[in-house]
Length: 369
Image (cartoon, rainbow, N blue to C red):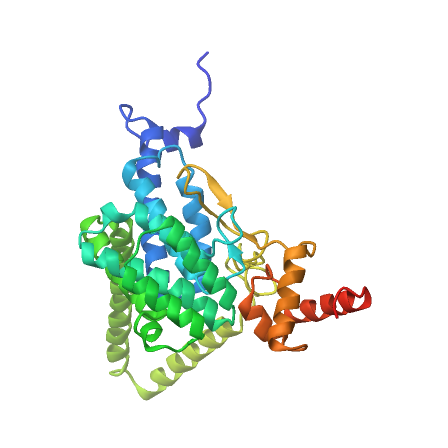
């Protein structure tokens, strides 16, 4: 007796040619979806839509983990998205992408950008974005009143990156004088950084088209719109014919149409099986990347591994060096000038209130005069 054949399995198998392995088909389809999500991330970046960007990022990360997504081009696009996500969080100094607590988002973005030099056709564009990343790494710290952090950023760049001497001297002077709105910073603004990166993305996408699935989807949407227009034309033709009927017939048909419309509008039946009964938004909540359960991002060490973004560690125990900073700050600025003292020394993320509390402790223990 011949074994029974599952009709459903036979139906699915009929879509695949016997000479083609389904795993190969899956790899191609996954590649199309990967490219579609890559374009989506580029679009969300251009539009500045933070939440939509994070939502698309989750899908992109899942696709990037596929064994078939390990070609040089796929790794290159993954690295570009790793760069974009750091720039998107450039003004959030409490977000970490690396183990070093002192490496802020734009600093991390600079490290990735240096690895993307081969993807930039115009060398001047590469240099411009490099300088913009450097300037904004400092400007963001100054804008948030963290002068010590701005100084640390400059030292980090001096030790890890090469950049024009004139730029370094200019930024050092700005940090020393605390000129948050210096014309130099305004000319290399954060908005200019975003616009320049978008120029890079436009050129890259033109050179590396990733829009096969996007175009197919657009054609489908257009065809649906055309079908909708045809329905409208058909309805208009019917109405024209009805116009030639008697007045009494038109009134009857009009009443019928009204009744049908009302029944449709008043219907409470939910046609979408996945839509919550409460008609609220989906229960999945995407939190900002600065939370602990945040989206993962590509590690610089390997594009195959993903790293969890985490917030900065809470301030640790007061050290003798920090106490010295506090004493010197009070001696220079006076007691109660905690915000100014914070700008002169690196207190490892502590606030003015913490400085005040520590000063009281030193006073009680008679460690200060």
